[in-house]
Image (cartoon, rainbow, N blue to C red):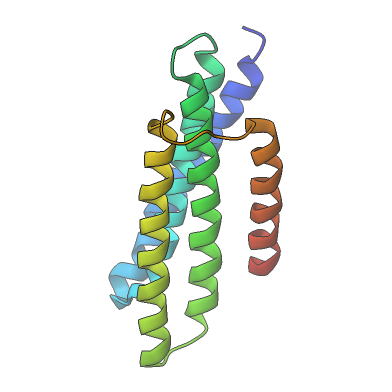
Length: 149
């Protein structure tokens, strides 16, 4: 079990994300505003991405390891996209920005569904190299994190 440290780190990160998820639900429950819905969604996606990577590392010879890795990439990217969108729209209070948040939220959910279908329907779509796409997703995640900070 050469990946034991990495597996433990992934599951510890997932646990932290799920604890943060619990705390991020409070602002949404308190205000009831849709613009705070992205925080719990983001930490839920992030926690799921860490669980998926932990499973991919644990079951290296499992049949669906490649699909699990792709799902991890997508869920992590959506987590950071939800965080960035939530931070962007939390500064705005007008009804117009609320409409744009709903449109952004719907677009992110639609993109998530489409990307998950692409991963699980490989005969229809040929996916590029995982390592290549991983680099692009890392750049996207860093851009989202740079905006948040």
